[in-house]
Amino acid sequence: MINRKNNKAGTALAFALLTAAFSAAPNAASACTTLSASGNAEYPPYLWRDSTNPGHLTGAVSYLLEDLAELAGIEITLVDSGPWGRTQEEVAAGQVDMMAGAFFTQARSEWMDYLYPAFLHTRTAIWTHLDSRFEFREWHDLIPHAGVTVTYNSFGQEFDLFAREHLNIEQVGSLEQGLMMLSQQRADYLIYEDNPGKAYAELLGLDNIQPLPRAVTRQPLYLALSGASPCNTEALQARLSAALARIAEAQRMERHLDRAVLHWQQSRPH
Image (cartoon, rainbow, N blue to C red; front, side, top):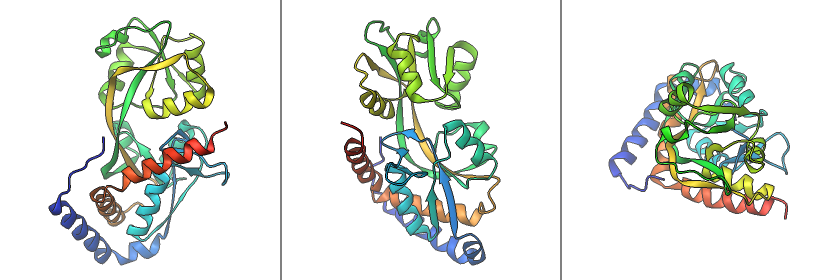
């Protein structure tokens, strides 16, 4: 869900933060004029590999970063770092400055600084084969079943802890692999966000799987700066957060999502 509240006080605060950030640290602005960013390359309509620009990503988050760069006065280059696990490793090492989309976990907060507000809320679903659906009302209903998900994925700190203690979930290298395993009934369920899952299921022509109605979690999605990035300063965090607040007030993310859905539909093979 996207926050549709029109809060004049919030807009005023965002302008004040942005003005203060620019005036407080002009040296920080000049010292770092470009940020590299990366994210999950199997994440349509939010992010996916740009077939027209190899090595780069496109999607709703890409359009968000274009807005952010303009408002904050800093260039942001969105690159494809490979599989999701490798992307997280490169951000943690400071080889990439910004994570373009991640849920909050305490472990991740130890190596990157989250930028507020969140730019989106997403729904994580349990995907099942049409021939082997089961009732899912609460997390404990998953205990008897064998699941699959993508390596290094998180679905919120509380669920991650429950899964580690109680669930049997195999981790695989890509969303495509997880969807194929479910389609071939080599797993009882796949846990993944519903919009990217639907996009890839359609791309692969898989019509024998679907998400269950009840969500596993609904999580805010954030941008974050690497703790090891030389660009990561309190002043830059304030500038970026103020710009994010202005984008939220203008409800720009809704338009970015609409544009990205159309782009994904037009770019995939027919």
